[in-house]
Length: 142
Image (spheres, rainbow, N blue to C red):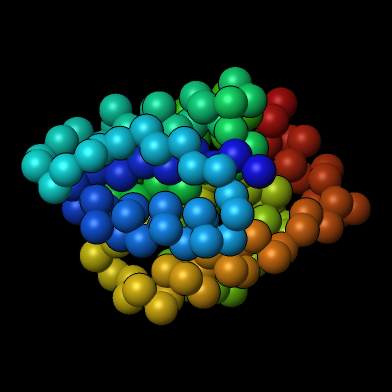
């Protein structure tokens, strides 16, 4: 499975952790940047990841910024993207199970390495339930 990742400067170190975790778990990583801790504008990287998922280059995306809020706002403006602000492992699971989220947005300044890894584990172990949730996702898409 191909996963597009991206971050701003605040999420840069955590993005490296995410990339390593994904590689260790045999996911193919498409890194959309940033590639240094120098100050950058998060919308550029959020758009790149969201477009990668929306256009089918990647099956899912992971975005990081200081709070996770900025990248989630930007990603959700792209048609076909259901970006979830994930701040713990339960939200990671529920956003996939109930919302069929395809982009996970992480608040890099507020999660430890262990918390990020648990979010990743729960995200990738969860499956969309469909059923009553499908009707809701279809309303989001329309």
